[in-house]
Length: 509
Image (cartoon, rainbow, N blue to C red):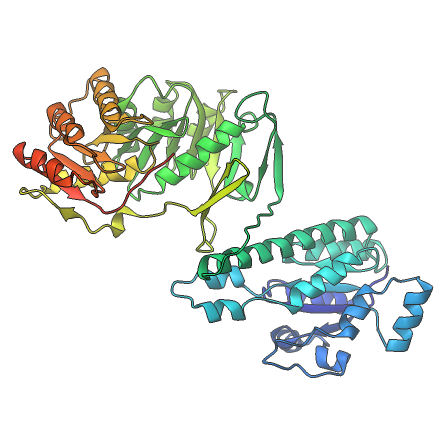
Protein backbone atom coordinates (compact mmCIF):
# COMPACT_ATOMS: atom_id res chain seq x y z
CA UNK A 1 0.00 0.00 0.00
CA UNK A 2 1.89 3.03 -1.22
CA UNK A 3 1.36 6.07 0.99
CA UNK A 4 0.15 9.00 -1.06
CA UNK A 5 -1.75 11.03 1.53
CA UNK A 6 -1.15 11.54 5.28
CA UNK A 7 -3.25 13.22 7.95
CA UNK A 8 -1.07 14.62 10.75
CA UNK A 9 -2.58 16.03 13.95
CA UNK A 10 -0.43 15.80 17.06
CA UNK A 11 -0.38 17.22 20.57
CA UNK A 12 3.19 16.04 21.19
CA UNK A 13 5.07 17.68 18.34
CA UNK A 14 8.40 15.96 19.05
CA UNK A 15 10.06 15.16 15.71
CA UNK A 16 6.91 15.78 13.68
CA UNK A 17 8.43 18.46 11.44
CA UNK A 18 11.33 16.21 10.40
CA UNK A 19 8.91 13.33 9.85
CA UNK A 20 6.57 15.44 7.71
CA UNK A 21 9.50 16.86 5.73
CA UNK A 22 10.67 13.35 4.90
CA UNK A 23 7.15 12.36 3.83
CA UNK A 24 6.84 15.44 1.63
CA UNK A 25 10.11 14.56 -0.10
CA UNK A 26 8.60 11.16 -0.91
CA UNK A 27 5.68 12.91 -2.61
CA UNK A 28 3.13 12.43 0.18
CA UNK A 29 0.22 14.91 0.27
CA UNK A 30 -0.02 16.19 3.86
CA UNK A 31 -3.24 17.27 5.55
CA UNK A 32 -3.13 18.75 9.00
CA UNK A 33 -5.04 20.60 11.73
CA UNK A 34 -4.63 23.60 14.02
CA UNK A 35 -1.30 23.97 15.75
CA UNK A 36 0.27 21.13 13.79
CA UNK A 37 -0.41 22.79 10.43
CA UNK A 38 0.94 26.10 11.78
CA UNK A 39 4.15 24.40 12.87
CA UNK A 40 4.62 22.61 9.55
CA UNK A 41 4.09 25.83 7.58
CA UNK A 42 6.67 27.64 9.72
CA UNK A 43 9.05 24.82 8.87
CA UNK A 44 8.38 25.40 5.15
CA UNK A 45 6.53 22.14 4.63
CA UNK A 46 3.55 22.25 2.20
CA UNK A 47 0.38 21.33 4.06
CA UNK A 48 -3.37 21.45 3.47
CA UNK A 49 -5.75 22.44 6.27
CA UNK A 50 -8.34 19.82 7.18
CA UNK A 51 -11.13 22.30 6.32
CA UNK A 52 -10.00 22.42 2.69
CA UNK A 53 -9.99 18.61 2.57
CA UNK A 54 -13.47 18.20 4.09
CA UNK A 55 -14.87 21.41 2.60
CA UNK A 56 -16.25 22.09 6.06
CA UNK A 57 -14.98 24.64 8.61
CA UNK A 58 -13.65 23.83 12.07
CA UNK A 59 -16.47 24.70 14.49
CA UNK A 60 -17.32 24.69 18.20
CA UNK A 61 -13.87 25.99 19.18
CA UNK A 62 -12.20 23.11 17.35
CA UNK A 63 -14.35 20.39 18.92
CA UNK A 64 -15.53 19.40 15.43
CA UNK A 65 -12.94 19.37 12.68
CA UNK A 66 -11.98 15.79 11.78
CA UNK A 67 -15.37 14.21 12.61
CA UNK A 68 -16.39 14.18 8.97
CA UNK A 69 -17.38 11.49 6.44
CA UNK A 70 -14.55 12.50 4.08
CA UNK A 71 -12.02 11.82 6.82
CA UNK A 72 -13.44 8.55 8.05
CA UNK A 73 -14.56 7.45 4.61
CA UNK A 74 -11.02 8.05 3.34
CA UNK A 75 -9.69 5.92 6.19
CA UNK A 76 -12.23 3.11 6.34
CA UNK A 77 -13.09 2.13 2.79
CA UNK A 78 -11.57 -1.18 1.75
CA UNK A 79 -9.08 -0.72 -1.06
CA UNK A 80 -9.80 -3.15 -3.87
CA UNK A 81 -13.37 -3.86 -2.74
CA UNK A 82 -15.59 -3.04 -5.77
CA UNK A 83 -18.54 -1.81 -3.71
CA UNK A 84 -16.36 0.30 -1.42
CA UNK A 85 -14.40 1.72 -4.34
CA UNK A 86 -17.64 2.63 -6.14
CA UNK A 87 -19.23 4.32 -3.12
CA UNK A 88 -16.01 6.12 -2.24
CA UNK A 89 -15.90 7.58 -5.73
CA UNK A 90 -19.58 8.60 -5.58
CA UNK A 91 -19.12 10.31 -2.20
CA UNK A 92 -15.85 11.97 -3.09
CA UNK A 93 -13.79 10.06 -0.53
CA UNK A 94 -10.07 10.50 -1.16
CA UNK A 95 -7.89 7.81 0.39
CA UNK A 96 -5.93 8.67 3.52
CA UNK A 97 -3.12 6.13 3.76
CA UNK A 98 -1.31 7.33 6.86
CA UNK A 99 -2.68 8.79 10.11
CA UNK A 100 -0.26 10.38 12.57
CA UNK A 101 -2.11 11.30 15.76
CA UNK A 102 -1.30 11.62 19.42
CA UNK A 103 -3.95 12.73 21.84
CA UNK A 104 -4.75 15.77 23.92
CA UNK A 105 -2.64 15.67 27.11
CA UNK A 106 -5.40 14.53 29.46
CA UNK A 107 -3.00 12.76 31.84
CA UNK A 108 -0.73 15.79 32.05
CA UNK A 109 -3.70 18.07 32.65
CA UNK A 110 -5.16 16.14 35.58
CA UNK A 111 -1.70 15.82 37.14
CA UNK A 112 -1.55 19.60 37.58
CA UNK A 113 -2.37 20.87 41.08
CA UNK A 114 -5.79 22.48 41.33
CA UNK A 115 -7.07 21.42 37.91
CA UNK A 116 -10.83 21.87 37.64
CA UNK A 117 -13.29 19.38 36.19
CA UNK A 118 -14.18 21.66 33.22
CA UNK A 119 -10.47 22.09 32.43
CA UNK A 120 -10.00 18.34 32.45
CA UNK A 121 -13.05 17.72 30.27
CA UNK A 122 -11.77 20.14 27.61
CA UNK A 123 -8.71 17.91 27.30
CA UNK A 124 -10.77 14.83 26.40
CA UNK A 125 -9.86 14.16 22.78
CA UNK A 126 -12.71 12.96 20.57
CA UNK A 127 -11.54 13.35 16.98
CA UNK A 128 -8.10 11.89 17.68
CA UNK A 129 -9.25 8.53 19.05
CA UNK A 130 -11.89 8.32 16.31
CA UNK A 131 -9.27 8.71 13.57
CA UNK A 132 -6.91 6.32 15.31
CA UNK A 133 -9.57 3.64 15.58
CA UNK A 134 -10.74 4.08 11.99
CA UNK A 135 -7.19 3.80 10.69
CA UNK A 136 -6.34 0.86 12.97
CA UNK A 137 -9.48 -1.04 11.96
CA UNK A 138 -8.45 -0.74 8.30
CA UNK A 139 -4.80 -1.63 8.95
CA UNK A 140 -4.73 -3.83 5.85
CA UNK A 141 -4.57 -0.58 3.90
CA UNK A 142 -3.85 2.23 6.37
CA UNK A 143 -0.82 2.93 8.55
CA UNK A 144 -1.49 4.51 11.96
CA UNK A 145 1.22 6.10 14.12
CA UNK A 146 0.50 7.17 17.71
CA UNK A 147 4.01 7.61 19.09
CA UNK A 148 6.94 9.72 17.80
CA UNK A 149 9.27 6.79 18.51
CA UNK A 150 7.76 5.01 15.48
CA UNK A 151 8.44 7.79 12.97
CA UNK A 152 11.83 6.50 11.92
CA UNK A 153 10.62 2.92 11.58
CA UNK A 154 7.84 4.01 9.22
CA UNK A 155 10.22 6.12 7.14
CA UNK A 156 12.82 3.35 6.91
CA UNK A 157 10.15 0.89 5.79
CA UNK A 158 8.82 3.30 3.17
CA UNK A 159 12.33 3.83 1.82
CA UNK A 160 12.93 0.09 1.63
CA UNK A 161 9.50 -0.65 0.14
CA UNK A 162 9.30 2.13 -2.48
CA UNK A 163 6.86 4.26 -0.49
CA UNK A 164 4.86 1.41 1.00
CA UNK A 165 4.66 -0.05 4.50
CA UNK A 166 4.46 -3.74 5.26
CA UNK A 167 1.35 -5.51 6.49
CA UNK A 168 3.29 -6.75 9.50
CA UNK A 169 4.27 -3.20 10.49
CA UNK A 170 0.73 -1.89 9.95
CA UNK A 171 -0.66 -4.68 12.10
CA UNK A 172 1.83 -4.00 14.91
CA UNK A 173 1.09 -0.27 14.81
CA UNK A 174 -2.66 -0.94 14.84
CA UNK A 175 -2.39 -3.07 17.98
CA UNK A 176 -0.36 -0.32 19.64
CA UNK A 177 -3.01 2.20 18.59
CA UNK A 178 -5.89 0.25 20.11
CA UNK A 179 -3.95 -0.20 23.35
CA UNK A 180 -3.23 3.54 23.41
CA UNK A 181 -6.88 4.54 22.99
CA UNK A 182 -8.02 2.00 25.59
CA UNK A 183 -5.47 3.36 28.10
CA UNK A 184 -6.61 6.90 27.30
CA UNK A 185 -10.27 6.05 27.84
CA UNK A 186 -9.48 4.18 31.05
CA UNK A 187 -7.63 7.20 32.44
CA UNK A 188 -10.59 9.44 31.64
CA UNK A 189 -13.08 6.98 33.12
CA UNK A 190 -11.11 6.53 36.31
CA UNK A 191 -10.71 10.29 36.71
CA UNK A 192 -14.41 10.95 36.22
CA UNK A 193 -15.26 8.04 38.49
CA UNK A 194 -13.21 9.78 41.19
CA UNK A 195 -14.51 13.28 40.52
CA UNK A 196 -18.20 12.61 39.98
CA UNK A 197 -20.72 11.56 42.60
CA UNK A 198 -22.70 9.26 40.30
CA UNK A 199 -22.30 5.49 40.49
CA UNK A 200 -20.22 4.00 37.71
CA UNK A 201 -18.53 0.78 36.69
CA UNK A 202 -14.79 0.26 36.93
CA UNK A 203 -12.63 -0.98 34.09
CA UNK A 204 -8.97 -1.83 33.83
CA UNK A 205 -6.98 -2.68 30.69
CA UNK A 206 -3.20 -2.99 30.94
CA UNK A 207 -0.62 -4.22 28.44
CA UNK A 208 1.18 -7.49 29.17
CA UNK A 209 4.74 -6.96 30.40
CA UNK A 210 5.69 -10.62 30.81
CA UNK A 211 4.49 -14.07 31.73
CA UNK A 212 5.99 -15.18 35.02
CA UNK A 213 7.31 -18.66 35.82
CA UNK A 214 4.64 -19.00 38.47
CA UNK A 215 2.74 -16.95 41.01
CA UNK A 216 3.04 -16.60 44.76
CA UNK A 217 3.43 -20.40 44.89
CA UNK A 218 4.66 -22.82 42.18
CA UNK A 219 1.18 -24.23 41.47
CA UNK A 220 -0.19 -20.77 40.57
CA UNK A 221 0.14 -19.24 37.09
CA UNK A 222 0.91 -15.52 36.90
CA UNK A 223 1.68 -12.60 34.61
CA UNK A 224 2.74 -8.97 35.00
CA UNK A 225 0.73 -6.18 33.35
CA UNK A 226 1.14 -2.42 33.17
CA UNK A 227 4.35 -0.37 32.89
CA UNK A 228 6.45 -1.90 35.67
CA UNK A 229 9.31 -2.22 33.18
CA UNK A 230 9.31 1.57 32.76
CA UNK A 231 9.94 2.03 36.49
CA UNK A 232 12.85 -0.39 36.93
CA UNK A 233 15.74 -1.82 34.93
CA UNK A 234 17.19 -5.22 35.80
CA UNK A 235 20.97 -5.01 35.54
CA UNK A 236 21.85 -8.52 36.68
CA UNK A 237 20.40 -11.81 37.80
CA UNK A 238 17.59 -14.23 37.07
CA UNK A 239 14.16 -13.15 35.92
CA UNK A 240 12.02 -11.53 38.56
CA UNK A 241 9.47 -13.71 40.32
CA UNK A 242 5.94 -12.79 41.37
CA UNK A 243 7.13 -12.36 44.96
CA UNK A 244 10.19 -10.35 43.88
CA UNK A 245 7.91 -7.89 42.10
CA UNK A 246 5.66 -7.52 45.14
CA UNK A 247 8.69 -6.91 47.35
CA UNK A 248 10.23 -4.40 44.92
CA UNK A 249 6.98 -2.43 44.84
CA UNK A 250 6.69 -2.44 48.65
CA UNK A 251 10.33 -1.38 49.03
CA UNK A 252 9.89 1.46 46.54
CA UNK A 253 6.86 2.82 48.38
CA UNK A 254 8.71 2.65 51.71
CA UNK A 255 11.88 4.38 50.51
CA UNK A 256 9.71 7.08 48.95
CA UNK A 257 8.93 8.31 52.47
CA UNK A 258 12.54 9.48 52.90
CA UNK A 259 14.49 12.28 51.25
CA UNK A 260 17.58 11.93 53.43
CA UNK A 261 20.10 9.15 52.54
CA UNK A 262 18.33 5.97 53.62
CA UNK A 263 18.71 2.20 53.44
CA UNK A 264 15.79 -0.15 54.06
CA UNK A 265 15.61 -3.93 54.32
CA UNK A 266 12.35 -5.79 53.67
CA UNK A 267 11.12 -9.37 53.82
CA UNK A 268 7.74 -10.49 52.50
CA UNK A 269 6.91 -6.78 51.93
CA UNK A 270 7.45 -5.94 55.64
CA UNK A 271 10.30 -3.65 56.75
CA UNK A 272 12.96 -5.49 58.76
CA UNK A 273 14.96 -2.35 59.39
CA UNK A 274 15.41 1.22 58.17
CA UNK A 275 18.30 3.59 58.79
CA UNK A 276 19.29 7.08 57.68
CA UNK A 277 22.73 8.66 57.73
CA UNK A 278 24.83 10.93 55.53
CA UNK A 279 27.24 7.98 55.38
CA UNK A 280 25.33 5.23 53.57
CA UNK A 281 27.47 2.56 55.17
CA UNK A 282 26.27 3.81 58.56
CA UNK A 283 22.68 3.93 57.32
CA UNK A 284 23.05 0.26 56.36
CA UNK A 285 24.48 -0.64 59.76
CA UNK A 286 21.52 1.01 61.49
CA UNK A 287 19.00 -0.79 59.29
CA UNK A 288 20.71 -4.18 59.56
CA UNK A 289 21.17 -3.88 63.33
CA UNK A 290 17.37 -3.86 63.81
CA UNK A 291 17.11 -7.52 62.81
CA UNK A 292 20.09 -9.59 61.67
CA UNK A 293 18.12 -12.78 60.99
CA UNK A 294 15.11 -11.80 58.88
CA UNK A 295 17.09 -10.01 56.11
CA UNK A 296 18.51 -13.32 54.82
CA UNK A 297 17.03 -13.68 51.33
CA UNK A 298 15.38 -10.27 51.62
CA UNK A 299 15.15 -7.05 49.65
CA UNK A 300 17.52 -4.12 50.14
CA UNK A 301 16.74 -0.68 48.80
CA UNK A 302 18.71 2.57 48.92
CA UNK A 303 17.69 6.02 47.71
CA UNK A 304 21.24 7.00 46.77
CA UNK A 305 23.81 5.38 44.42
CA UNK A 306 25.53 2.41 46.07
CA UNK A 307 29.32 2.65 46.28
CA UNK A 308 31.91 -0.06 46.82
CA UNK A 309 32.05 0.34 50.63
CA UNK A 310 28.31 -0.17 50.99
CA UNK A 311 28.34 -3.01 48.47
CA UNK A 312 30.97 -4.86 50.50
CA UNK A 313 28.88 -4.55 53.65
CA UNK A 314 25.68 -5.67 51.93
CA UNK A 315 27.46 -8.59 50.25
CA UNK A 316 28.13 -10.20 53.61
CA UNK A 317 24.55 -11.54 53.62
CA UNK A 318 22.49 -13.27 50.93
CA UNK A 319 19.88 -11.00 49.35
CA UNK A 320 17.31 -11.74 46.66
CA UNK A 321 17.11 -8.20 45.28
CA UNK A 322 19.08 -4.97 45.69
CA UNK A 323 17.54 -1.72 44.40
CA UNK A 324 19.16 1.69 43.97
CA UNK A 325 19.02 4.62 41.56
CA UNK A 326 22.57 3.74 40.46
CA UNK A 327 25.50 1.46 41.26
CA UNK A 328 29.09 2.63 41.05
CA UNK A 329 31.23 0.46 38.76
CA UNK A 330 33.10 -1.40 41.52
CA UNK A 331 29.92 -1.97 43.48
CA UNK A 332 28.18 -3.37 40.41
CA UNK A 333 31.12 -5.65 39.62
CA UNK A 334 31.06 -6.98 43.17
CA UNK A 335 27.33 -7.68 43.11
CA UNK A 336 27.50 -9.34 39.70
CA UNK A 337 29.67 -12.10 41.13
CA UNK A 338 26.52 -13.36 42.87
CA UNK A 339 24.53 -15.21 40.21
CA UNK A 340 21.36 -15.52 42.33
CA UNK A 341 21.17 -11.81 43.12
CA UNK A 342 18.82 -9.57 41.14
CA UNK A 343 20.27 -6.10 40.74
CA UNK A 344 17.65 -3.44 39.99
CA UNK A 345 18.10 0.16 38.95
CA UNK A 346 15.18 2.36 40.03
CA UNK A 347 14.39 4.67 37.11
CA UNK A 348 13.27 8.29 37.59
CA UNK A 349 9.57 8.37 38.55
CA UNK A 350 7.06 8.98 35.80
CA UNK A 351 4.73 11.97 35.94
CA UNK A 352 1.79 11.00 38.11
CA UNK A 353 -1.75 11.35 36.81
CA UNK A 354 -2.80 12.32 40.31
CA UNK A 355 -4.91 9.14 40.55
CA UNK A 356 -3.21 6.23 42.32
CA UNK A 357 -5.37 3.19 42.88
CA UNK A 358 -5.07 0.09 45.00
CA UNK A 359 -7.00 -2.80 43.42
CA UNK A 360 -7.55 -6.10 45.24
CA UNK A 361 -9.47 -9.17 44.25
CA UNK A 362 -12.29 -10.39 46.49
CA UNK A 363 -14.94 -13.08 46.14
CA UNK A 364 -16.99 -12.13 43.11
CA UNK A 365 -15.23 -8.88 42.27
CA UNK A 366 -12.59 -6.32 43.15
CA UNK A 367 -12.15 -3.66 45.80
CA UNK A 368 -10.79 -0.33 44.55
CA UNK A 369 -9.46 2.43 46.78
CA UNK A 370 -7.05 5.34 46.63
CA UNK A 371 -3.54 4.36 47.63
CA UNK A 372 -2.46 5.42 51.09
CA UNK A 373 -0.28 8.33 50.00
CA UNK A 374 -0.72 10.46 53.12
CA UNK A 375 2.65 12.05 53.87
CA UNK A 376 4.09 12.64 57.32
CA UNK A 377 5.01 16.15 56.20
CA UNK A 378 1.29 16.93 55.91
CA UNK A 379 0.58 15.97 59.52
CA UNK A 380 -0.54 18.50 62.07
CA UNK A 381 0.54 16.62 65.22
CA UNK A 382 -1.76 17.02 68.18
CA UNK A 383 0.10 16.69 71.49
CA UNK A 384 -2.44 15.17 73.88
CA UNK A 385 -0.25 14.65 76.96
CA UNK A 386 0.88 17.06 79.63
CA UNK A 387 4.49 16.79 78.52
CA UNK A 388 5.32 17.96 74.99
CA UNK A 389 7.94 16.02 73.02
CA UNK A 390 11.58 17.05 72.88
CA UNK A 391 13.07 17.71 69.48
CA UNK A 392 14.71 14.27 69.51
CA UNK A 393 11.47 12.55 70.53
CA UNK A 394 9.57 14.33 67.79
CA UNK A 395 12.13 13.19 65.20
CA UNK A 396 11.90 9.62 66.49
CA UNK A 397 8.10 9.63 66.39
CA UNK A 398 8.03 10.92 62.83
CA UNK A 399 10.65 8.38 61.77
CA UNK A 400 8.61 5.55 63.24
CA UNK A 401 5.43 6.94 61.71
CA UNK A 402 6.95 6.85 58.21
CA UNK A 403 7.91 3.20 58.66
CA UNK A 404 4.81 1.85 60.45
CA UNK A 405 2.70 2.94 57.49
CA UNK A 406 4.40 0.16 55.49
CA UNK A 407 4.14 -2.61 58.08
CA UNK A 408 1.28 -5.12 57.93
CA UNK A 409 -1.40 -4.56 60.58
CA UNK A 410 -1.51 -4.80 63.48
CA UNK A 411 1.76 -2.89 63.32
CA UNK A 412 4.11 -1.48 65.96
CA UNK A 413 7.48 0.16 65.33
CA UNK A 414 9.98 1.33 67.96
CA UNK A 415 12.30 3.94 66.53
CA UNK A 416 15.02 6.44 67.23
CA UNK A 417 15.41 9.66 65.31
CA UNK A 418 17.37 7.95 62.51
CA UNK A 419 16.65 4.24 62.72
CA UNK A 420 14.21 1.49 63.56
CA UNK A 421 14.82 -0.43 66.79
CA UNK A 422 12.07 -3.03 66.76
CA UNK A 423 9.30 -4.01 64.34
CA UNK A 424 6.17 -6.04 65.13
CA UNK A 425 4.03 -6.92 62.11
CA UNK A 426 0.80 -8.61 61.21
CA UNK A 427 -0.47 -9.68 64.60
CA UNK A 428 -4.08 -10.20 65.64
CA UNK A 429 -3.45 -8.16 68.79
CA UNK A 430 -1.65 -4.82 69.02
CA UNK A 431 -0.13 -5.87 72.34
CA UNK A 432 1.32 -8.98 70.65
CA UNK A 433 2.77 -6.81 67.87
CA UNK A 434 4.43 -4.68 70.55
CA UNK A 435 5.77 -7.76 72.36
CA UNK A 436 7.32 -9.06 69.14
CA UNK A 437 8.93 -5.67 68.44
CA UNK A 438 10.35 -5.58 71.99
CA UNK A 439 11.58 -9.16 71.68
CA UNK A 440 13.21 -8.40 68.31
CA UNK A 441 15.02 -5.40 69.79
CA UNK A 442 16.28 -7.54 72.68
CA UNK A 443 17.45 -10.24 70.26
CA UNK A 444 19.36 -7.57 68.36
CA UNK A 445 20.87 -6.16 71.57
CA UNK A 446 19.21 -2.78 71.06
CA UNK A 447 17.97 -0.65 73.94
CA UNK A 448 14.49 0.85 73.68
CA UNK A 449 15.26 3.37 76.40
CA UNK A 450 14.17 6.80 75.18
CA UNK A 451 12.63 5.39 72.01
CA UNK A 452 9.38 6.36 70.33
CA UNK A 453 6.64 3.81 69.65
CA UNK A 454 4.53 4.20 66.52
CA UNK A 455 1.21 2.39 66.08
CA UNK A 456 -0.59 2.19 62.73
CA UNK A 457 -3.99 2.45 64.48
CA UNK A 458 -5.20 3.59 67.87
CA UNK A 459 -4.41 1.76 71.10
CA UNK A 460 -7.81 0.25 71.99
CA UNK A 461 -6.73 -0.19 75.61
CA UNK A 462 -4.06 1.36 77.81
CA UNK A 463 -2.21 -1.97 78.04
CA UNK A 464 -0.43 -1.46 74.71
CA UNK A 465 0.91 1.91 75.78
CA UNK A 466 1.87 0.59 79.22
CA UNK A 467 3.81 -2.25 77.57
CA UNK A 468 5.67 0.31 75.42
CA UNK A 469 6.54 2.40 78.50
CA UNK A 470 7.79 -0.66 80.33
CA UNK A 471 10.00 -1.46 77.34
CA UNK A 472 11.59 2.00 77.65
CA UNK A 473 9.63 4.15 75.19
CA UNK A 474 9.20 7.76 76.29
CA UNK A 475 7.12 8.92 73.30
CA UNK A 476 4.19 7.51 71.35
CA UNK A 477 2.57 8.43 68.04
CA UNK A 478 -0.79 7.01 67.05
CA UNK A 479 -3.97 8.06 65.21
CA UNK A 480 -6.19 8.35 68.28
CA UNK A 481 -9.93 7.91 68.00
CA UNK A 482 -10.57 5.11 70.52
CA UNK A 483 -13.44 5.34 72.99
CA UNK A 484 -10.72 4.76 75.60
CA UNK A 485 -8.41 7.55 74.42
CA UNK A 486 -8.69 9.28 77.79
CA UNK A 487 -7.52 6.11 79.57
CA UNK A 488 -4.55 5.82 77.21
CA UNK A 489 -3.67 9.50 77.67
CA UNK A 490 -3.91 9.12 81.45
CA UNK A 491 -1.59 6.10 81.34
CA UNK A 492 0.92 8.14 79.32
CA UNK A 493 0.76 11.05 81.77
CA UNK A 494 1.25 8.72 84.74
CA UNK A 495 4.48 7.53 83.14
CA UNK A 496 5.62 11.01 82.03
CA UNK A 497 5.36 9.94 78.37
CA UNK A 498 4.65 12.35 75.56
CA UNK A 499 2.08 11.32 72.97
CA UNK A 500 0.86 12.63 69.65
CA UNK A 501 -2.44 11.94 67.89
CA UNK A 502 -2.17 12.15 64.10
CA UNK A 503 -5.81 11.72 63.17
CA UNK A 504 -4.59 9.48 60.33
CA UNK A 505 -4.73 5.69 60.35
CA UNK A 506 -2.46 3.40 58.30
CA UNK A 507 -4.10 -0.03 58.28
CA UNK A 508 -2.38 -2.41 55.86
CA UNK A 509 -4.22 -5.70 55.46
